[in-house]
Length: 329
Ligand code: SF4
Image (tube, rainbow, N blue to C red; front, side, top):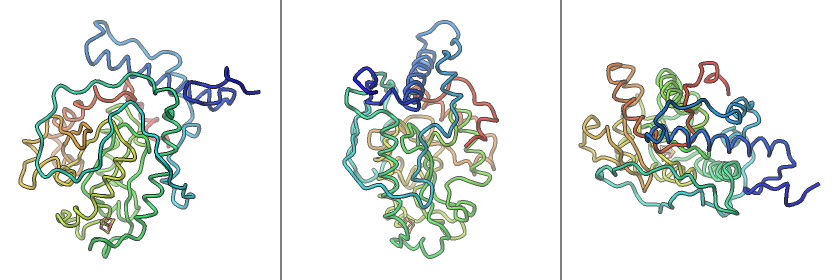
């Protein structure tokens, strides 16, 4: 039976048990995000209480019942491109080429939008499905790309992977050996460290999106050349415009240059430690995990950079994720 009393404000059919659980999970995330935001902004003078029962229940949902980004599974059917409902309470950003020079950091950090989606706007689950379709279409367009010389030596084009509706996107410089072999971004030792960084922030790896400025491995792991970045960056821009994250984290100096956050002669050490902006999206730049593996003393600075993002994010969990959760896919 269906009727108005069985439809959520997001348009979900609440007579469907899966829709009920998705709605409950969305509500629980919003509650947990507000509590964490209050704690971070000092609204609560007392220690943060434990998550409400609903939040606990949401975390125990099997990942298989969460909408997964199907586009990242190779061979999945390509959805047809369509108009993109984009009202998730964030400002629209117009596509524009990366800025060549760094911009002064916006201060203070913008507050997290707390309002529920406007009536008629797609829910997070619905937006995720739409974004998956657009990303899948983009990946198909990029398939076999030969626009720059990096295509000549690659084994696999590395599109990137993660949640198509992620509120946080990590951008590296380009695939390395392991990424080229597997066709996945940030695998191998630096990928393992990035996973730890993501978990420490309060996310599972599949709850963020991870990609690179260039999608094909430069020979002998050299830095991507400016013309190669310039040729490939429009793909990255499309990815970010589809996902529309709340925040971006650029990993390493080359990624920051590719995003137009700093100039080609700028120092990462002097540019990090504050918020930048990419097309209206708050962005931090920090050290690449591969560099952190070589210079572990810099991990503290990287963690300070990541913490700049916390007030901007609402889906990260207030409590650290248990190791066994990080293994769950
Ligand atoms: S690096 Fe980018 S532009 Fe160059 S071949 Fe690969 S996908 Fe195409």
